[in-house]
Length: 273
Image 1: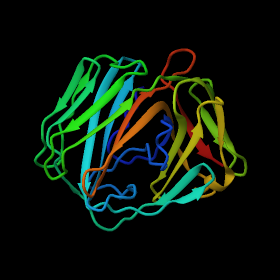
Image 2: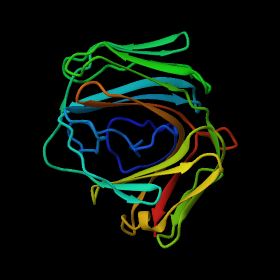
Image 3: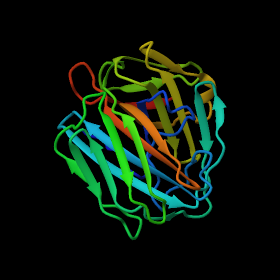
Image 4: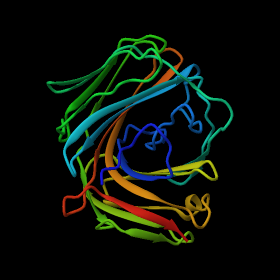
């Protein structure tokens, strides 16, 4: 099963690798649609906030796609920092307005993905039937501008990791009084776990250095979620870039799914006990 990271909050846990330049702990969880709870945006988003996701998949079939969302105003709350994690309670009042950033052009080497300007804030996003990066390529994004001013952003494409703990797709029984540990080999950036609890309207995101090949989510971060919480884990490698046109904060996230040793896309279920 291929699980896409779409622009809608679901009851999902995302375990991803995030670039070291991602130093303000931004979510790699799905971005909201207009009828979803508000998410937190970074400092500087006084007018609006946007995200462009470049998604690469290796299994079960190779694919690259681009998704984007820009909205104003930007309702967001300050996160609570718990060690390597941040926990945010999302605002529920008001609905952000989806807006237009003009034509979007994504360039990866000699490959180009384009999305024409969206007058209603909804972009028709392109995809390919191949993975356009293996790691190390420059990914460049250009927006011609409209309600969102013109901007450019670029990042280096990530390489994928092999997840070794868990070693296969499984259900992880989590003791909320103990740290939650993971392990992996290869890949770039740092490992992120992002969890959204739709009942409590709380999101947790934890960033772990990729270099050591292992890391844990601390007990005090898990304590923000009640016993009985269940979700899906998806592993990926991600590197992030930003752009800051006047009054706006824009994230460019490029990620590729991580794999188990047998080559399948890495994911698991989570149950907090």
